[in-house]
Length: 322
Image (cartoon, rainbow, N blue to C red; front, side):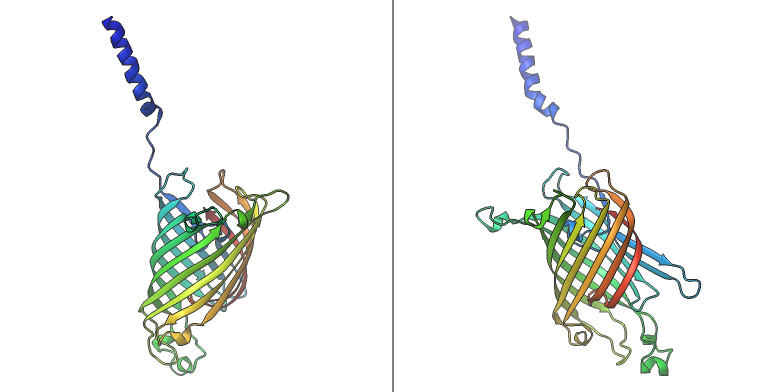
């Protein structure tokens, strides 16, 4: 009788412990590396691979072009979660040589990204979209190339403002890209598409400013702007597209700027970019590394990044991880 009681008790104990044994311990999320062309909310049409190109001209100066945004992300949610959250450290490098708009820009900082459910804005599920949000703070260093044709540089070419100078600033940004069933179509025939509107705010606070080539003075203070844009992508499927055609445009509107910075900042500026990319390497899963070649056309201005009168076509190697 006692043996039967002990056997029954052991069976009950094993049964009670079986759920805990059946559920493996959840592994903490691993660090994830993202590589894109520029920092944007984690929404498909705004995610483009980094681009690198070089031109060797035996009869003139060589040219190099790169737009790289490298991120190391620490996920804050399990990989199976519907809405991912992450903390990120990022490095941005934009370099253009051999063009009418040379650039040498660098930024480093930290960001928080999350997918936001908009259902809380309404008592029902009538709002047909969610949002991918990104908030960041960083340090930016932007090269300012001299206007050698200015009267000052013609008269005194050794003046400090007649050499490459660097603007240093602290930046804070927040942006949201909107997505959902109403903004995309999975392939039912030949094409799939995805559309994502974007809204954001950016503040740039100078900590070190170049000398103005005309006045010999340094600007100071902050610059606050709002940005609104839309991106569209066409591809054969969502998960592992072999090719992609994308178009994005944004309007940057100056909200306020210090007196010394206002004359050099356009009140409104538009930037357009179109790209066609063929991928030689595609990820095995939905997210992962990809590489290919593409043609990128850029036109417009962006006062925040120092891009002015851009009008270029680049044949580039494209590498991405997202």
